[in-house]
Length: 394
Image (cartoon, rainbow, N blue to C red):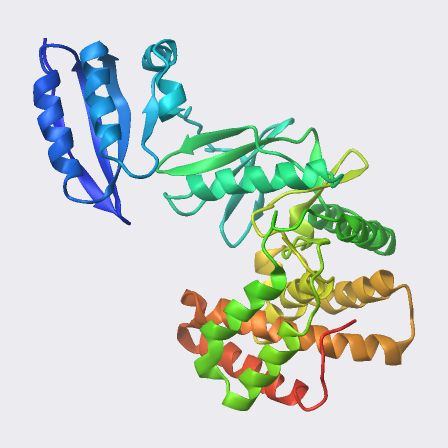
């Protein structure tokens, strides 16, 4: 009978302790010495049971001792079905957070139906899609998105809720059942002659989302998020600009209506004829301007210094950006009054430049000639718009 002890790797104040082979009365004392010794180094432990074949009552007692030395949550992850049954029968699933081993999924040869800032969406079969995140530590992000999607669904917003988390190579993916789904972006690409009808349905669904009122403290306030953005970009603003923007954002009243904050057309699916939201990790509460500014960033700001952006990111001609944005404004505010739309547009543009500058300086997009050009453009727009915009109320 063989067994092995594998050392842990501390990352982000979490120590991964790998459990391997069999843990029973023969080797439990050695496991206890090793586990408790690693825990004394101060990081929160996560037990990785991917290679654990069996654990006896003696091994379970070792884990109980470990739990007594843990202040926070103690997690056991990547547990096989057979070992999970042992934890469940002994009641350990009530005492620990025990997570079954994720099934592995290959996306080789699968159709790519969207690529975004955080990952790529693949169609696995006619009924199933998977969003594969770029970072290997994305499981907490996925679980949070599942939680947020359930909150929105309960409030009547048609939402795709992930029903599984899978491993895709070294990364993780979130699996959705979306029968014959097509994004609004692809719908527009495939049927450009129906441009006006598609945009009207799309903006109509945006209004449905904005009509959903969430419980207080259930979601972050978009207003507070933007105040955080200001702190990140503060060194790129003058003191007067920072104070003006901070005052205008802070003056926005509490609003518990839902905003998605990334409502671009790749994140809204048509399932049959019913619109449905995906990518719920950014949802918040706040005024409609927080969604409209994000759409301005997508369809106008990114392409201003990079005319090929919409083609490379969304697969649509760059000249569609202005047309889409104008249609969004007319349909959302139900008016063709150019003076009224112009005044609202200025406010939206200013808030959009705050977020755009934040996206640039907080990521690798700040690098290179294009990054520098975009940062200067955003700063120039902010300075000009602050000459006329006095508040963010629409």
